[in-house]
Structures are given as structure tokens and as C-alpha cells.
Image (tube, rainbow, N blue to C red; front, side, top):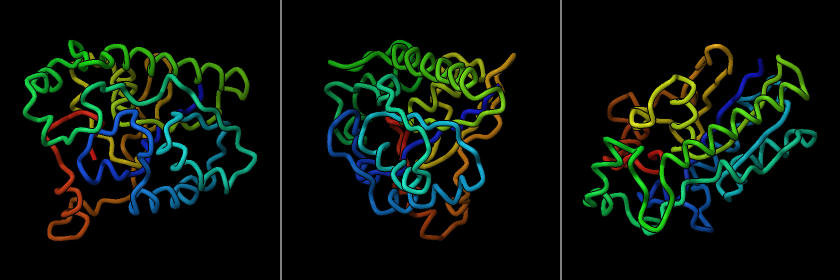
Length: 230
């Protein structure tokens, strides 16, 4: 069975400013996210990727750009089903502001019951991204064999949904999963699916007190579990 390397895009200007980007155009990587993207070819050196699949949004395209430059032969496919959740009227609002919304309590405790105002239901996001991941995995196996490794670059909530599915968790538990920007999660679908690695960034700096990394991540922490967190 193939191995899926599930990549969250690098940190964006929306992540670092505490804004829920959703599908808004023009949300690009910030300076830290650009460094994360530049490091990706080195992190994946020696891993023989059969293909890369990505959300069509700019931040995912930007994240994969250095890898594509390093591996011009790599087949790359845009996949609309792994685009960010449509947050509707919440798009573009600050996470601090959204924390006061009554719906946020349901987002935290019962996401399966949430439909964003003017936007998408989280249960529909879960369904489309899980189906896309499993269908692409079957396609990769058919075209490249059971030992193939492939990459999917997508968004925080999507990573959480795919991981929850692999672990057999109900959607209402997926807020317990926190993938960092530019983190790599490895899943192998089988009977049962296996979570081989979760949220690997190669950087443990956030856990060292009184460092720039710890201060950066503390500043980005939020009690509003939408958009995957920063």
C-alpha cells in the first residue's frame, strides 16, 4: 500500500496576523512560511515521490514551488476537493473576534453540527477531503505500485479531517489534532490505516522557554480552532 505524506502549507500572512483566510484570494506565505517552503526539498531529499497533489489556493502552490523547481520531473496535480473550507461570512475576520461568536462553542465541541454562515458544513469538508485522499491513494497504487510514496499539500482543517478518519475518530474529536504549518504527516491506508508520523516539522524550538520560537508560537496560539491554527 502506498504512503501518503500529508503536508500542511507553510505559514501565511493570515496565520501570523490571526486572520481566518478561508478561500480569500491573495493570501501568501509570510517570511517564515517562505523559509519553510525553501526547506522542503531538503527535508524530502531521497524520498522518491510518485506525484504531488495540492489545493488550488496560492499558499499551497507557493509551498510546493521550491520542490517543483528541485524536481521538474515530478507529476503535480491541482485537486479542488482538498481546497480550504468555505468559511462564508467568517472569512477575513480575526480569530480574536470570532472567539466571541456563539457558534464557536459548537465548533470546539461538536464540529459535525457546524455550518458556517453563508459557507460550508464541516461534515461536508470532512467527506470531500477524505474521499479525495483515499481515491488518490488508490490511483497512485494502481499507477505506481504498492510501495509508492506521494505528497498532498493542503490546509490545517483538512489535515485534521484526514488524520481523524485514518485513526477512526469521530469528526467531533478532530479539534484535538493540531498540525503546524509546513508539517508532514505520514499515513498508510490498509486494514487498518496506520498513522506513521504526525506533524513533523523537524523543529522543536517552540518547546524551549524564553526563545524566539517559543514566543512566536505563543503569540500565534488561539482558542479558536478554525483554519487549523497558526
